[in-house]
Image 1 (spheres, one colour):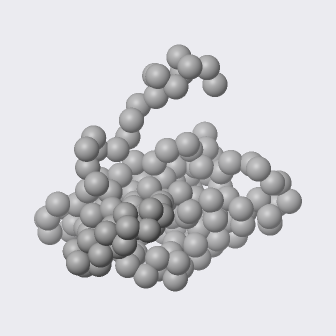
Image 2: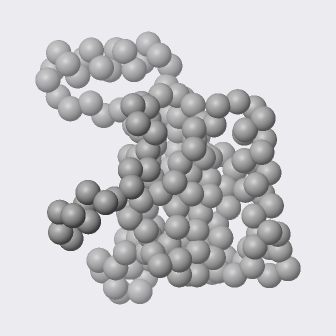
Length: 169
């Protein structure tokens, strides 16, 4: 990719926002070229295939790798994924970790939405490629969409949107 294309990329994150803050986040991740690889919609119900099953398994197992992360409502669609991620870090835990890291001069290991999404995408990609014996093939678009859920009304609207997505396909 040449330098001009890098400059033309749209920055998807909210400028200046700390994505390691406790809170609820709505993410949408699309497949590369919007390929319908995770299953199909049948009478308003998403029918997962083996690849959709892999995505499901990786999603529900995220808390096993990140103890302060909870998974909310989610839906796997033929060519994209919607999910709610909750980060729950007690303020004193983050402060103590940041101070310790500064004292020891070691890199911080604070979890962000970007870290969770990146490892989720990488895990799914690796498992699907291993199944197909196609290593290094990307299944996801380069980026993802996120929305910071700010109140209960937004949460309810987004949760209903996720639940009804197959019916509206």
